[in-house]
Structures are given as structure tokens and as C-alpha cells.
Image (cartoon, rainbow, N blue to C red; front, side):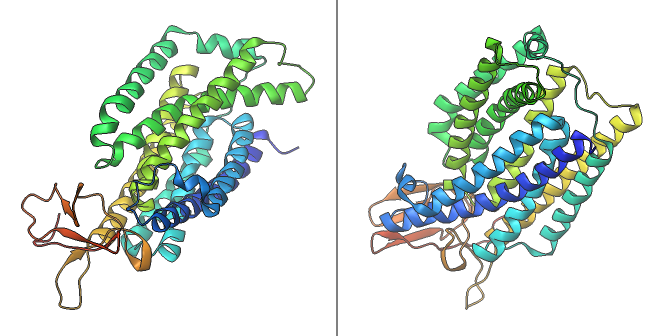
Length: 365
């Protein structure tokens, strides 16, 4: 019989494929909603809920998350979560073809490093924690170390939601991404616990007689709602190729920290496996970072017909948004308030919509 860990591995790969595809479809829906209202992306509120393309992306995401749920119930989080790098690669490749977001040679190197890092992780991933009942899992969650981590994560999330979000959310992608990542790290533990409950119940050991099973379900589901909301906020404002890598690193890091604290270690067979696992994480993070740098360079640089350098924002007709400048709306014009030392940065309003191009001089760094 095939080991549960390898079944979980296959499910995680399928989940990453669906999730990477969903981000591009969702972005198309967000752009479509903004175009129909003649307003810049990030300012359409919840109008995307009426867009069928957005719902297509959400349905694809739901399929991916369902596969992820099954993967977490069969394999350790330290194996499943890093495989999310595949969703970054798939999202970047599809965005380069569908949304015209430039990938480039450096981006391909980043993708290769992501594949190498995840391969190392798969080869040295630990066995899943041996949990025979939900009360045992609940006992792990009630340990002082994990409770302190949850309280710290809650305080951080509330601060980012109500203080940093309104002030910096539209100019700094890390604000909304950090909320989604930290809450996501907690959601993985809830999903893992509920998945274990379902697995044990199907094996004949009913776990739905325990209140903690339902508590884990509510916690996981509630965290997922918050996670998806703020991930959508980031995706609505910033480029897919900016959000995906940052979100991957943040979410993966939060999950690793949560798992380490909850289970008190990596549960690896040897120190060599632990070292290899850490190297795999570092190589994957490096690949995501290089991919991110390549995508931002492709988004921020270009030349017009006269040879002048420019950055392009928006996604229609080959344009890609860059988060390098904060947009402040004025009558008839959009100006970039964070462009100190960069002369000539501006965008004209055309027919009630935003002209998705800005000239910059000198070249931004």
C-alpha cells in the first residue's frame, strides 16, 4: 500500500497547480470589475463579487484548497506547505502569457531554484506526527508556548488590520500579505487537526464526539475567511507577480513557525535530514526572492518609442502595475506622491478611467 505521505505529496502538487492558476483567473476578474466601473484597481470595493471571472478563480482556488486539506490530513505541514512554491511558478508563467507580466531569464532561474528547493524538501521531509486522537492534538494546542504564539499572532494581526492597513495598505504590499500569512499559519494547524479527525473517523475511530474537533473546524474556517479576504485585498492592488512570491514566503514561514512550536521540533529522523530540510527551505526562499526581483524589474522598466524609460501600471494591453509609487487622486489627474527625486511622474485620467502609463526620469531603482 502507498504511504500516506506520498499520497499527500501528490495532492499537494495538484493543489499548488490549482492555486497558482486561480490567482491569475482571480486577477483577470478583479481587472474586469475595475474596467466595468471605470475606476482604478483596488478601489472597486466588493464589486468583483458580481464578476463571473472572479468566481471562476475562486472556484479553482476552492478545488486547490480542498486538495490541500486532504494533503494536510495525510502528510506533515513541513512537506505540504513548501510545495506551495509550485503555485508561485505556475502563477508567474501563466501571468507572463495571460496578463503580459514579464518573466525573463532571471525569473526562469528563480523558478528553477524553487523546483530544486522543493525537491530537497520532499527528499528529506519528516514523517507525520503520530496522533491517535483529537484530544491529543488539543493537548499540543494548549501548551503555553503555542498559546503565547497564538496571542502574539492575534495582537499582530489586529494591529495590522486596524492601524497599518488604513494607512499603508495601498502603498505597501507587505501589510495585507502579512495579515494573510500570519492568519494562514494558524489556519493550517486548524485544518491539520480537522483533517486528522476526518481521517481517524473514516478508519473507525469516531472523533466527532469531541468538542475540540468542532473548535478546530471553526478556527480553521474562520482563519481561512480572513486569510482569503486580505490575500484578495493585496491581489486587487498589486501585481500577481509581486503578491505571489511575497505571500508564499510569508505563509510558508508562518506555517513552519506554527508547526515547530505546536509539535516542538521538525520530527526528522536525523540531524542530517534536519540540515537538508533547512537548506531546502533556504534554496526555495532564494528562488522565490530571485523570481520576485526579476518580475519587479520586468514590471518597472521599459522604453517608449523615443527611447525614454518608463514604468507601466495596470494589466491591460501589456501593462503591469508597479507598487513603487503611492497614488493620490486629484481632480483630473493622478500624481505619485512617493516619487521624490523622480521628476515627471504622473498619470492622466482618460474618459473617467486611469491611463495606465507613467513616465519616469531618472530611472527608478
